[in-house]
Amino acid sequence: MSSVANPDVASATARLRALLGDRLHEPGDPGFVAATRLWNAAVDRAPALVARCLDAEEVAGAVGIAARCHLPVSVRSGGHDWAGRALRDGGLVLDLTGLRTVQVDPDGATVTVAGGATAADLLTATRPYDLVVPTGVVRDVGMAGLTLAGGYGPLCGRFGLALDNLIGAEVVLADGRRVAADPRHDAELFWALRGGGGNFGVVTALRYQAHRLPAVLAGMIMFALAEAPAVLRGYSALLAEAPDELTVMAGFLPGPAGEPLIFVCPFYSGPDLDLGRPWVDRLRALGVPLLDQVGPLPYADALRMFDGGMVDGNHYLLRTRWLPTLADGAVDALVDAARKVSSPFSAVALHHFHGAASRVRLANTAFGLRADHLLTEIIAVWPPGGAAGPHRDWAERTSAALAPHALPGGYPNLLAPEDTDRVRLAYGANWTRLRRAKRRYDPRDLLTAVPTLPPAAHSG
Image (tube, rainbow, N blue to C red; front, side, top):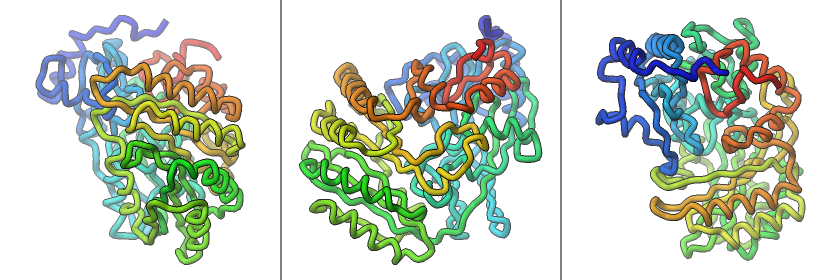
């Protein structure tokens, strides 16, 4: 039985009000609605309180109060978890959106970001120095949520996942203590944070190794849906030969006529961009491009091609699979999903995992899959007011069709809260150690995060 089963909301409210003043929001306050609004408007949660913290000391104070008052805690940073786990029913939401500072050490090539900073915040600060840190493709996503569970992105092949570039973190533990986690200070916590999500404490700062990268050769190439089978098979063949410097997304995006288009999106990050041009030419030759916008760009500018792709306020439901390769059956399932898409706003994305990310030893971090693969992201999207059923059915059918071709588990940041068995499978050999870390750092199950681990009180 978790000790947060009988929260004392009244006492927590009084104590938090004394700490934060009008930055504590209760249901009915004007700021409460804004503080609980997420990217996915389908999320319907009812937190008891929202604490808008402006520094690590306030976070520590709020966590300590929550622990004393048996109030469960969730953390809102970027707010881009599709399942809404940033908002915990009946709990205290720690709103970190005010912690956005970024400090760059150009000589040491390191970057320290506060717990609420987004990828855009980070890249804006590093750009004058031609430095980058691996991010995902959406600039509005919070770096903490992205990094702690993995962090697939366009620089995966050359520099690894976002978590592979994390060299230290400042954490508020579930008892309110502030600690440092890095290879020399609490190495076990540092291990668990890199893949295990925010289940062990509230991360108020992250320190990254940065890399010099003045520009990438990147962009979007799109083809008609009728060419999808040939494009996907050619894409699969090219990936088998791709160097570390080349990471290529693919998938289906809404087209202007209502029918999805298939896309490939290369990011070549080598020091000589001209060496990437033959690879881009091979991608162009997979079909007859309807759109071809590949060229040299600063990394931060290249990510802008994804701005507006997933609009705040729509309803979203995601499903995911890890594919070891694009076997013929997987290609057929993906093409069939595109042809039968239930909404003109829905999409499918394939994220390329290889190179530097695949050479990290499995035991070095909590992240549970280091073999080359494609992360498949099935994204059902529909406007507010529409029935969810047809879109849920489409996503479920697509996931089921891919299952025979998939690896066990899946990317924990995208798994549904009810997918507890797949979360366990996602961590594989790291699962037992990760569960021990949960019991050690949050034995009272104060924290839930992405991915949501089962309660520490449960064995396994």
